[in-house]
Image 1 (cartoon, rainbow, N blue to C red):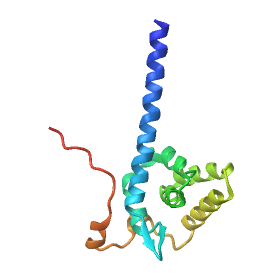
Image 2: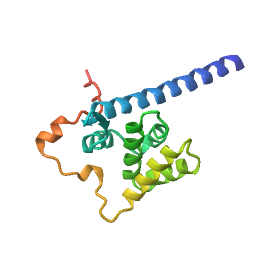
Image 3: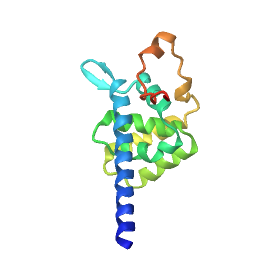
Length: 148
């Protein structure tokens, strides 16, 4: 009986890790699909942030926090900006990540996001002025399949 319970807990834990990785990958795809290019350089832009922000809720705070340590700088920038946009809980997650960042670049990304969010001219991501044509260009999360 104990072996069965241990096996069930291990399986549940592995499935939770797989779900987390799947969500990480989904949000990275959203970032990649909405990344801009200028002067042969890949970068985050308004579309990247609007797309990512439209895909997340406060339930995604742990995922976005993990993305702060991603190797890809655009992913780090996008995750930090969206965390800052998620209000008090997002800013708290950024401050906790700032307590022990793995490198100076990550520290800089987090500090910049917090500074921008505290600026008197800060505009929430969902309030960015976009035309209907611009909104069509945004490629967000996959929609769930309709019920049958």
